[in-house]
Length: 153
Image 1 (tube, rainbow, N blue to C red):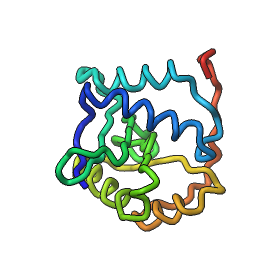
Image 2 (image 1 turned 180 degrees about the vertical axis):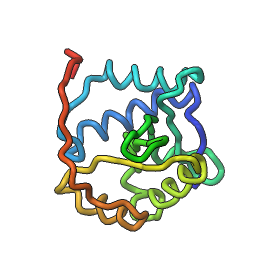
Image 3 (image 1 turned 90 degrees about the horizontal axis):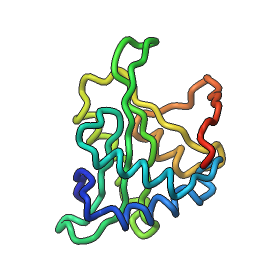
Image 4 (image 1 turned 60 degrees about the vertical axis):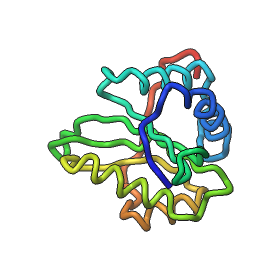
């Protein structure tokens, strides 16, 4: 697998993968295609310091196998950069091949200054939980609370 930054020519396939991911039981809330397109646009805007996307491809770069998006914030609890793994999607044919573990190692190398890496996972998504635990992630004792302000959601 090769991990590379999102490129403009990836937009159509990325949107298709995002639609599958966001329509799956892996997420509690459904998201509009308009919101997903805003995500892609934000990732393609190289001036945007808050969000990034990567594409997973075959070693020769010809076949897209998945994607990931992260967002960046500051955590006052730990006094430094927090990397949120917002999306991690691997096409079914490539699951259970170590891609998620490879991606987690990649972002840790990309952000050695980060003091915390976070992600959300559905409680019923046992396969994902096991994969994340293999990369050192643990269940948090915090409750996540949100207030939705976007009418598209």
